Amino acid sequence: MTPIVATLAAIVLLAGVAFALVRALRLERPWLQPWAILRATVQLGILSLVLAGIITSPLLVGAFLVIMVAAASWVVRQRLDLAARASAGVAAIIVVSTAVPVAVIFSTGAVEFSPRYVLAVGGILIGNSMTVATLMGRSLGGLIVDHRDEIEGWLAIGATPRQAALDVVRRAASTALIPSTDQTRTTGIVTLPGAFVGAVFAGASPIIAAEFQLLVLAGILAAGGIVVTGMSRLFGSPRTLPMSRVR
Image (tube, rainbow, N blue to C red; front, side, top):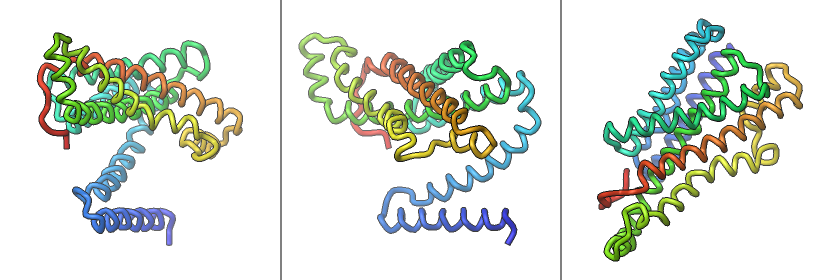
């Protein structure tokens, strides 16, 4: 069996396990996990071909990062069922949350400023910013529904919408930051993060790989803080209260 055939066989088997378990538990849309794996396979195949042609071009890398931001914003919009106007705000949040850590990392000289490293760091931060934005949006929507009476009570005694929703906004922001925080806290003990493993496999010394991974983790935490700040400003003053959770 050739390596590519063995890889595909393992992917199919693992996708089958995920599908079978989710279906057996009667969870919603059990086909989502195999579909996600299929999409990842196709997208990574295309990405591998594309990156070979753009990895040394600053303009093409910049264009690719713009595409990634657009895709991340679209995912958040779909997950949170946002209007177009709010989607533009989410896109701006993702841009800022990525740009600030990237600027710090490269302006300090911590990592060589080159297209390939900008793409690597920027891509990681965009993905994590998307996740934090989605988690906060879903958590905030659920908390507003669960605490609707409390929020309405604050409004009834003269609080502004932002003041009335302040407690649930803070809870949602804290929840959204948990995965990033736990990933950082458990690195090297519970998990071997991808950037570290990839750098070691590429031939870097473990010390250099650890330095790069720490920069990535610090960037992820900074990006997460920017995301929840932006999401708090964008959605922390609801004019109407939803009647049900986002599905």
